[in-house]
Image (cartoon, rainbow, N blue to C red; front, top):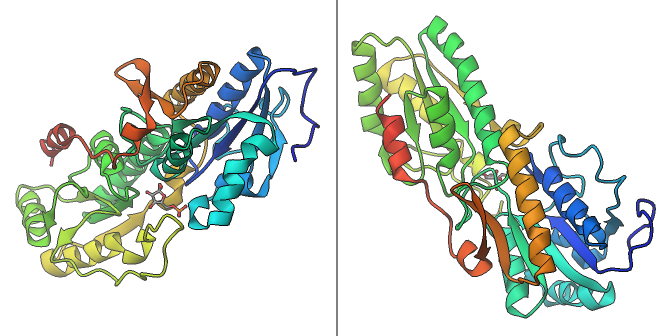
Length: 356
Ligand code: F6P
């Protein structure tokens, strides 16, 4: 049960829960703070479940009063903790989720997450449970929103890394392969690469052939460019490139393979060195992309989405999530949001390509 240490004053209104699920990213705390603060305006008692859906199953929650959400806007990660728990894996745990509303007197639940977390929220909403979503993922691949919380901070990290890698690549005349996150979509690779001046970008949406890449790098060398920076998304497919056989058992509860084991960046750097003779190095940016404080954009986006999610609870608009479309926050159904991964807009790729 929730501990009371952080509650302030009397709240005779509704009790509303919040959780953060899936991979963490900068901006989650800003969203928690926004839901909680808007909720307090409405006189609600706001509670936070620890570690995503696991906390709902285990009834592991804390009160989110003024004091507990104060000073978290600028902190990365999530004060609630997270996990990749899919409660639908067992009837028993999904029943525990279903019964949490009556058991804790919960009037609503705000689920902050990417497609996996939102798919659980969607399943509950279809059963008539009072749930709203809130899109976050540094992969930026949730349908119905132009931006998810965490993406802008992640591409800022990628851009900064490319800025640093440029000087060492130029000094040593090397091919530098930079592996970034992006399981199903190339948003991080394309936008981070575009902002950082990448000389080649490989994304899951465009099938790439190893020999074309090598030929491109050789043409650059002949044209007098003594170094190249190649950004590759972890989920990209490069025809003709041998990868480490993925460990098929190494999957999370939502069935996703752990892509790091494929070592696409390492394999690419080896192939470039072997076939073009260019000395090559690989940098796997990994979880640095998800760490640290949120960018200006993510703080503002998370705050706007959090306030809007609370307003949707007020309006009892279950089965929806707030989303950014253009410069407006709109309400999008979880039906639409979870209908598949949002793929990279190839117009953006074509802009990046001009500079290869
Ligand atoms: O879901 C976002 C993501 O960043 C993916 O791009 C990546 O494959 C995955 O998380 C890795 O996360 P973890 O190591 O936490 O399982």
